[in-house]
Structure formats: C-alpha cells, structure tokens
Length: 185
Image (cartoon, rainbow, N blue to C red; front, side, top):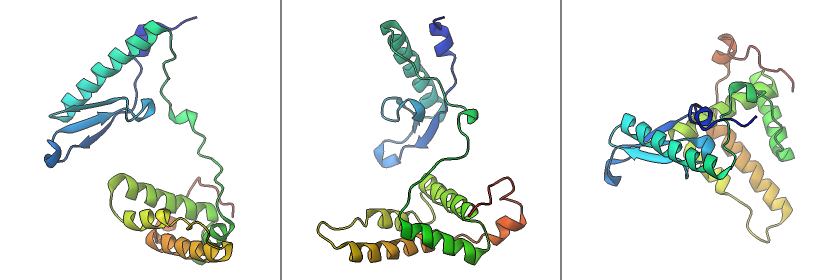
C-alpha cells in the first residue's frame, strides 16, 4: 500500500540549529542532517524563523519528490541503532588503548566509549581538544615515507591524541556511568 503525501509531510526529523556569526549577517541556520545538511538548509533572523523556513522547504521538496514517485527517506529512531558497531583500527592504536585501559583499571570498551564521548563533545561544541584531534588527523604519512618511520610517527600521534583526550575515568566509575556498558577487553 502506497503511503500518502500527508503521511510523509507529518514525519518528524531531527532539526539542528546553529547561530550565524554577526560578520556573516547574523541570525540562525537550521538543517535536517538525516536528509542532507547541504540540501535541507534554511536561515532566519531567529531560531523560530529558521525552523519555519526549513519546514516550508521540507514540505516543498517532499511534495515534489512524491509527485515524481521518488523515495522519501523515513526518519531514524533510537530503535534503529543497537549501540554496537565494528571499527577497524591500526594494531598500534589497539595496543595503546588496551594499555591505557589497564592503567585506568577499566575495560577497553569503557575507555573507548569515554574517549569517543569526549571527542564527539569537542567536535560538536568546538571546545576542549579539537585542535589536537584535527592536528593528529591531519598528520597523514608523506608519500614515499618508510613503513617503519610512518608506524613510529603514528604511534606518537596516537599518544598525542590519547593525551589530548585525557579523561579521568575515576569519577565516572564511582557515579555508575559505565553501568550497562559492556566490559570486554
């Protein structure tokens, strides 16, 4: 059974707001990340105006997509995410993370969750260590560099990154922040 246009127009998507710097004209920018930060963008003098403009754009685009018979993506919900995913990392980084977890007396999973949380917070807020994260990520091996010197340099970057994202896990352990989080190493 084909869903109606009204069904799609009633869907609720996460809207993200960010201020527009005064030197760029001021106001607020609203986006729907799930539908494409570059496609679904609207601005306004206030947050509400930006949201209203974004909703107007969404209705217009959805109406056109529906008319053309094209797919309209459904919003993701918390239930769509299991809380688990596989990440492949270099062996030296796996080892460094393992050793750091041992030093902190936490599981590898707990350490990685804490580091990811802090790095994500830094990325979203633009505070606390973003320069170090960006520097480490930008340190790609130069063309023609030897595998040995690259591995050595990468280990240094990993140590710098771990230091930049230093997290004191003791208060988290005391406050039960890791309850329900896997304890595998």
